Length: 98
Image (tube, rainbow, N blue to C red; front, side):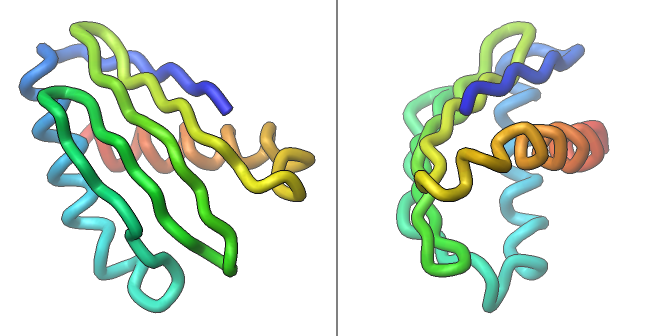
């Protein structure tokens, strides 16, 4: 799955927004999501998490103009990729605009 979300700030501020959004989201994910990996290298996040017994892995790359998400969905979830992508875009827009 590949998603590009534009932002209207610089790379450092956009990276800080992602980090804050992840911290703010943790309490809402408790009991539903297990974070297996969260590794930052400058403005790139490599992640892995497990939800509903399925692991999702990928990266979030932050450029001067965009958030770029590349994630590998479990095989059975790929049927719902369009719906998952739409939900991620809506939630990310709300979280990252704050």
